[in-house]
Length: 174
Image: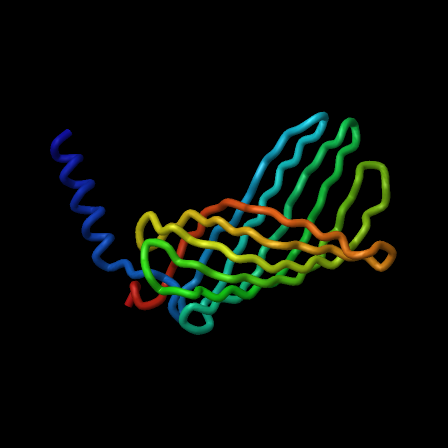
């Protein structure tokens, strides 16, 4: 037991030594956000996996998927979308890094038994990554999302999402 404890401590310290905060050019981030909610005859499960590449220090571009399943009463709805995004980190301080993010994407919503509807999605948000170590961060983002079809006016929503990001590459791996 003692041997396992000291081996774990040694491994943690050694891995922490070569890691660096990963918001510099050449790094990438992999993770995403998600959520689940329930209410009066309503349920919603949403996952938004994402990958981004740091094209310059503090600046990432990437893409995310929007995967959602909703049930309202007996109606079941699936939603699939893809959205490129841009993100700018305002600080390089640890353990908390604040950022702004913008996206534009395309979604398709398909209620069961009805034809799919396609729409454009826009989003602006601010958030923070709280780093547990130099590679993994808890993410919180709040912002505005708008969606528009050719037949319907813009639908505006505001929300909060939680997730996890993993940062790979960059100066810490050289």
